[in-house]
Every structure is written in structure tokens, then in C-alpha cells.
Length: 245
Image (cartoon, rainbow, N blue to C red; front, side, top):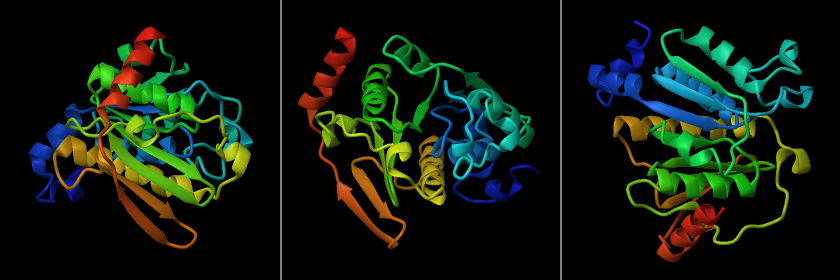
């Protein structure tokens, strides 16, 4: 009965629900993007969800990371998220990972999951996610927030473009919410779109956002979709970077 409403969909059915139950998704960063993504994936019945975050809940998180409340301030995001999501769905496995993603643990960790969701807010970690996903042979669902704008794409999916095809060179510019500010609903909406991409990939339905970049301005309501080209030389350069450390 829990999944009755989605099982009724022709695109899902009982066989699709079995796919969701057998799926493994890792969320790197259980913040503004990761919270809504985790809530909807847990509700959908993803069998195993990894929650990776080394940070603690702050009062500044609460306006957008609505999985948490005032009683959680000072506690581990990964542990709190696991506890609350387990209350949402006691039938799934939730894994709290209280550590930062590093070049030493990324590939080994990614091999344990089917796909990766990016809930981070810095370029360095996004490059690491991308390169480790290439080595592990996993797709990842990218999102980024800047003030009232959001970006969404799926990289390394079925031999498609990677993050480095879009952003060949890193930047030192700080575009985190802490530096620029954000309305709480913005990462909430983009995080839900990430969850939708994850479900499409697992179920094998719809049009996965691979080879495309969705640009959304939630203040004006405008959207753009840009086509991305695969650049093999950039992908290989990224692999060399992570191998060389």
C-alpha cells in the first residue's frame, strides 16, 4: 500500500518498484539540495541511500534544509538525516557517512552505489565527484545554486558528457549560499529535480538530462536548456588528475 500511487503508473508498476527497492543511491552533501532529494528518494522506496556529510546542523541551515529543526542544531547532519528518513520509511536501508569526500575515499565509496547525487556547493568537490564517477563507471546528477538560479544536468551517463566538458577549468570564485545568499525554496526545487532524474535513471524511463544543462531562474520563471558536447580530452585529463592525486 505504501507505493500504491506510483505502482499504478504504467511507467512504474510492480517491476519498477522492484527496481527502486534494489537500487543504491549516494547523496554527497545532505544540505539544501540533498535534503529534498533524500526525502523523495526515501519516500519512493530506494532500497539503499547513502547520506554523506561531515557537517553539523546550524541555525542558518533551517530556512532551506527543512529536514532539520531547532532541536537538531549542533548534531551531525548525516545521523539526523538517517534518523528522520528512517521514520519516513522503515523498509529501506539508510547509511550515514560522517566524513568529507576525498581523493582517497571517493572511488571506493562510489563503487558501492548505482548513482551519485551532488548536494555540494564548491567546485573542487564537484570535480572530484566527476572524476571518481568516471573511474567507478557511475553516473552522477549535478546541481548548482546561485542566488535565485539553479543548474541541473546528468554527467557520465551512458557514455555522455562529463562535468569537465562543461567546465574544463576550475575557478577560485566562491559561489556558495554562505557567500551569496539564497531563498530557501530554490535549492528545494532543484533538489527535487535531482530526485526525479535519479528515478528516471533507475526505472529506465523518460528523457534523462544527459548531454543537456537546465538553467532555471526561479525569480523570473524563465528556463533555458543548453546542449553539451562530449570532450574526450577533458575527460581523460580529469582521470589523470585523480590518479596522480
